[in-house]
Length: 611
Image 1 (cartoon, rainbow, N blue to C red):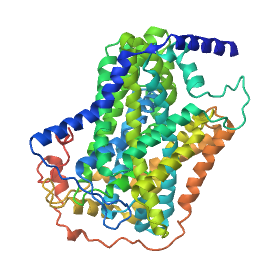
Image 2: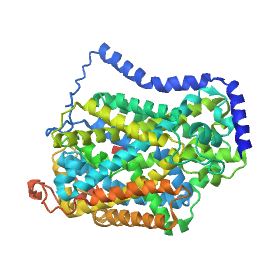
Image 3: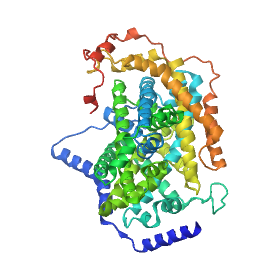
Image 4: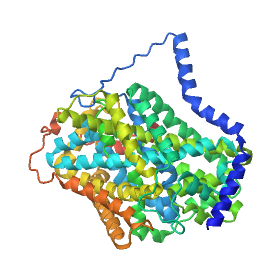
């Protein structure tokens, strides 16, 4: 094994000596980097020539003011779409599908999205808009006993943000080295390049390394570069963030469309696509592990439970139709995952046809293995376009990650501002607090820059990104049932949308039967049962083949989230929410039924609206 590694390293060194700058890779990178400046520069010139004056709002710098800043509908939608659609849609979703029966897993994912993730996302949007406070203060106002759950949600957000920043950072060495021809991971082997050049991971068979191992300078540089970009984007106001978000949301969509069009016509692509949607192993639908993976992916993708949706919605316009916004975000997220997977499986099918390895073996690598080994290796089969397609793929991952990081960092900054305000600490400008949060996330994230950092990341992704997220979703559903109530949820939505042009009588939660089913049953029962199932499974068998001490890290953080959540449940203080009366809003109760037949003056969201 040592000799093979030395041989691979010598090949890589020899290849490095022969490498040259790729014109196609450089041109592609410059093209995608200049999309935003060219668009806004052209827009500025057009407005100046035509005398168009655009008044820009001046948002308040602090998130803890009683009179909260209001963001416009377009920014609100783009921010939530960017938050929901992340790297997991490209590297986590295909792995879940491949590992759990193809079409069966796809069915489980769609059902989980409809019955758990999307409803919870909607209810968080309604709560945030109604209460107008960031998550911790929002939960405290619903009833003080839930403040611990809010703090646990904030702590979980910080942990996810720390390792998610590292995932984004992994793309930077690949983007940079995509400018070299031939691609450096081709000569040495994509797996060897990922494990030894990028991660410098520990080989258990030949090395004895205590703890997490040393910190890798190349990964630290990439990580701090990511956090510098995040800070420079979010630290200087929502107007700057909004303009960048429009580009970072739309550009990955365009790049994915290009990749799908290019890959589906490759030789062998059909085999990969058949493995994706043409394989329906129905026995997987009777396996709880399939549902746990599918529900975990639906929740991780939409990410209710981390507090970002509530915090962002607290800045929504008082008359914002969050029901319509939720339909747009949910459908966009699900469609993007399903559509982007065609490119992944088409490319895997082509690679299988060229290499002789089965589609199943290639597709069932875990998330990081699928993105940075399988997909990286597949770039060579594009021939002269290898460097250009490599830049497109890894830059797409980079942008998808940034959008989610922007939203999570904004939420973390709001939590920090609230914390300072509650304790009478010095009031910092938002950009300074953002700088502190980004710096803290970068330094804590350095534990994932160690030689065992990727193993720790994958363990955290399991314990926090799956089990803890399911647990928090379960607890949040209990809070909504017991103290916020379904009636108040209906009242909040109706009040916000009453007298809107499209909903003159106010929008109601609908379809009524489905909303009541998920509010009272499917969200709490499925989330709680699947979290318990994963906990029992990990206690019994452990998680994968990761070292015991790394799994212990995951358990410690998970138990800490449990303890924080339970820490305030003893409080008996009543709710701080004002009493409400549905009679305050003139709502025609037949409106819901009429909408279903297309006869209402306040129609449900139609597909044409979403498009």
